Length: 422
Length: 121
View 1 (cartoon, rainbow over the protein chains, first blue to last red):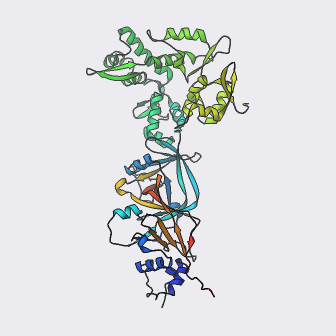
View 2 (cartoon, rainbow over the protein chains, first blue to last red):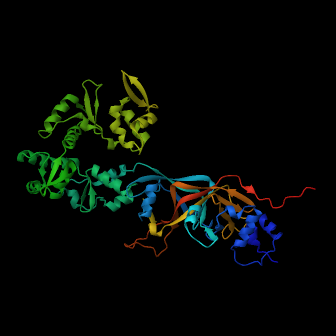
View 3 (cartoon, one colour):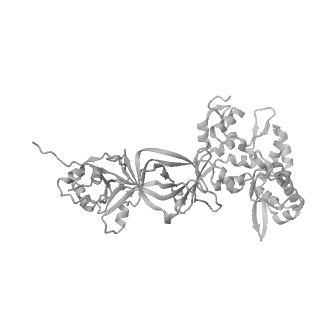
C-alpha cells in the first residue's frame, strides 16, 4: 500500500507505529486527518477517550503561515482599548522618521515597543476553548483548524505623555496680532487646521484639543492661532474696563452688551474668545453670562508686568501688581505657580518670569535646566515646574526621588541635582 | 510625519481567535516549510485541560484568560487603486482582523509517546 509521505512525515515516528498494528487505508490526496486516525493516535498515546471532550482540533499550518512574517502581528491591548476596537474606532500610529513611534486612540497616547518572547505564539482562528465547546451543541467531533500565523514578538503599549511641546512651537510660527495686522493680509505665513495638527503632533486628538484650550488658542477661519500676548491683553483690558464702567459684577458679565459695546473696536469673535479664556460661560433666564476668573486675570496681569524686565524687586512688584488688577480682585503669589519664581535668599527679595512651557519636555533635560537655574529647590518651589512630567500614576515625590538628591538645609528639605551641572 | 491607521470593523466584523504559546521552535520535518503541514491534534480533557499531540510527544497545558487581550493586525500596503475621497494615495494601513482573549499555554516538558516497549529477554 502506498502511504502519503507528507502527511505521515509530520506526525513523526507515530506514522511508523501506525503502519504496524493497523492496516493502512488507501492513501488520499487530501491532507485532512480523519477521526479514525485521531482515535488511533489517542490509542497509541494511551489517552482514554472517555477522559476527553469529544471534539478534537486538528491543527495545521495555513498556506500563508510563516510566509511573509512581517505582514501580520500581535498588538497587546489594555481592556479599554479593546473595547474601543470592538466599537469600531481606529487607532493611529504617529511619528516622524527620527521620532519614536506612538500609538494614539481618540484620547490617549502610548509608547509603542516590540516585546520579544522566547516562546512561540501561534494565532489560531476557529479554535474553541473547552468552555465554548461545552456551551455549543455540536454533532461534529473533529474541527480542522488552520493556524493563520505565528510570531515570537508582539507590540506592547505603555501609556505616555503626549508630545505637545511641538504644538505651541508650530502655532508660535504665526501668532495672531489682530485682523488689521499686516501679517493677516499676507497669506504666506504658516497656518494649521485641526487635521494639519494631527499630521504633525504625536498626541491623540482629545489631548491636542485640551492643550489648545490651555494655550488660549482660537480657531480663526478654520485655522488654530495663538494670540500675541499684547493683543490678548488689549482684548482683556477692553473687557475689564467695560465691566468697571458699567459697574457689572465680575461674576455676571453679560455677553451681548459686551459684543455691542466692544464690537466697533475688535471683532466680536475675539471678544467672545477672550471671555471664554478668562471666564466660565453660563445661561440665566435665557441670557448668556460669563463668570470671570480673578485668578486668571491676576495671573495674566502679572505676566504682562514681569515680561518687561529680567527681575523685579518683590515688594515693589507686589504693590504695582495689586494696583494693576481690576478693582475688587485680590492678588496672591499662589496665582503665579509655573509662571514666576521668587528668590527669597537674595537681598532684596526678587521675582522673575519663569514659564514652565518654556522648559524642556524631556524629564532629564527639564531637571537639568531647573538645577542650572537654581542649585537647591524646596518641594514647594519645584512642584509647579515638574507637575506636568508626572505619568499616569506617578507622583512628584517619585520624580524627585528619581532625578534629584535631597538634603536638609536650615531645617528645610531641599533637592539638588544628582550629578554636577556645568 | 507618518500616520499609520489601524482600523477596525467593529464587533460585528471581528472574529475571536485563540493564541497558542509553545516553548521552543517548531520545525518542519522536511525542508518544505511549515505552510500546508499538520501540527498535531489538540484535545481537551473533561476538566478542560488542553492536551496537544505533536509528532511523538504529548504536551499538557492550561487555558489562560488574558488580562490584556491581543489584536491580530494584518498589514495592507495599498496598490495603485487605493485612494481616499480626496484622491490621495493612502499609506500603509493595518486592519484588525481578530481579537484574542484566551491563550493555551504549554510550558511543561513534553512527554514522549513510547510505542514500542522492548520485552525483557
